[in-house]
Length: 330
Image 1 (cartoon, rainbow, N blue to C red):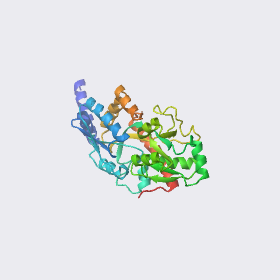
Image 2 (image 1 turned 90 degrees about the vertical axis):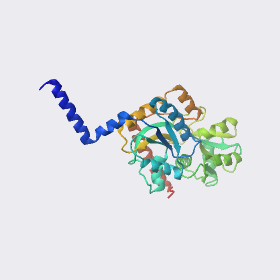
Image 3 (image 1 turned 30 degrees about the horizontal axis):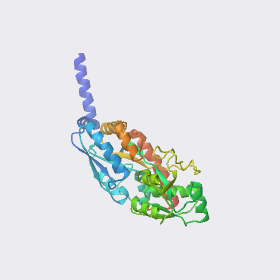
Image 4 (image 1 turned 60 degrees about the horizontal axis):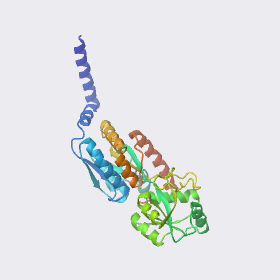
């Protein structure tokens, strides 16, 4: 048998094997991808850090791929409406979703979901972290540190108020983690969004709040809010002089509000890898870095497998806390 004949037979055998395993259609689909615009679902309203990250990355990544990322906001039910829609979308690489800590918390929070955060999605990348910061207002001039907050709360159990952007948000959970590790009790006051909560904090109607750097930084710069500590394990470039909660004495504290991108489960791995590569490379561009810095976002850019492991760790951590605190929204 000639070498050419053997090569033809080998190629034929390989194609047949790929066809039997279903890999051939996936490879063919991936090689042609993308040939039309990609829908990028944001399961929260416009204007927040999540929406901003999707728009910043989508604009640049679309130019690299030669196709537009169409940002589609689908808010409601703590991100569940958008997540449910994406979980049921065709697994062809033309629908992706940016989301956050809700992928780790919504299952224990809501009990019965119309989707499974693990089984129904394929992780693409952990994009960035936007730290929360514990802030207080000018009505409490003697509160200048986390130790002051803890001492005050111990003197007045369940009297001091802590605002949040709503039940189950990262801001709410940051507060629950704080009270749990510090061994104190505070009265949680949930609002419908960060804006109204900050307004009441500025007005003195509530005592404290964990807020994202994105929305708190201008009030901190103006002196109307006093930053006490960051929720992340490391200090932030946006507020370099503000200590972390661990540095401030709350051992083991680490709440890193993260943003990641997912596709429906079953999306061909070559497409997942292409998306990962273009997004990670986009986050290295100087103008993108500058824009993300501007909203307090700290770039991560992980592999799909690293994001899978991250979600598993986060799910275990938050399931334990939510169960201990008996926090449910169903």
